[in-house]
Length: 71
Length: 353
Image (cartoon, one colour):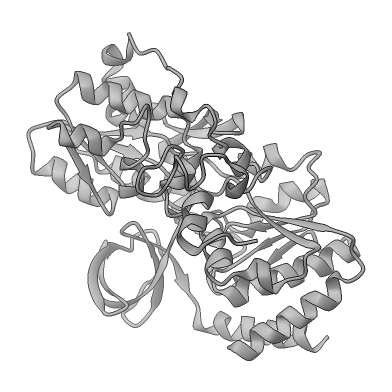
């Protein structure tokens, strides 16, 4: 139930956006997120984008991994 | 990424050497899916026990809520909408699909917004049987704010943080893997109050590397006694969570004491529609229908261990019914129905010990 799938935002038609879920296009609500733009990655859960996924923080976790593994 | 897995597993082996036994409980069905699918229990040392907690929202809904929805369907000519998992949960051998086969208008939706569209295009009353934790609640809350006159919500939503508050005191668990997608909404901040129990927690993502790294982080924290609250899922979970989603969720729902399968009554865990939104509260609108409702016990479930499995006290293989009387095709307990139920996941990927 709490599965959320990362999707790429293709087009905004507020409060909706067309997103690509692994290639499949779907209309989802994005109005609970601040400042969503085409090209952003969002986590989609039951038709609602619940959070942005940050590329910067994906790099951050890679750094965290490296740090933990080096210790 | 295979190299990363091997390196994390090696670190876990080193860190776990000094422990006689460490009990780690995860709190999300999707984590059990990752753990079973990638057979993570077989990768880590035997003294690190990975237990599954009450992290499946379909599984924890008590039979009483389901019976109430059945009761409503029997008495009223409504269009009943819900998620696919929920429609398969049986009570006395009947599920919502049984009612559909009998001619009742039961429709599976992907999202509450699909249910809202059905209501906008129909003269009939449409009821959405709403389930899920904080991950799912914001979508229902948004729908409540836009509800046409013929749209009603039967809320079986539960707040997850109060369940942790109920689980953590006097627990024998050494560390918790907190639910990743609940956390995208509630944020790291929601768990700060739970650090008083001095049991380390880590918010984890859902890739096998995420779960393994979370186990490693927990082992270090258990050894050192700190940190008590960590976030491994930084790519999606912020400190404050999703503020807009929390606002709409708190505006639409009030917290009441609610019953959970296996865990009993948990204070402030049931999300009921607040007074402002009671015009779309199915339990209020159909009040007369529920007047003669009396909950019953399902005799078929007498030997079902779902309640113990949800508490991490038993594994599916401890249950006499598992893969005998109770299978994914003909389930008895809700843990065998939901894709996030431990029994269903073990049935799919095989015994995961």
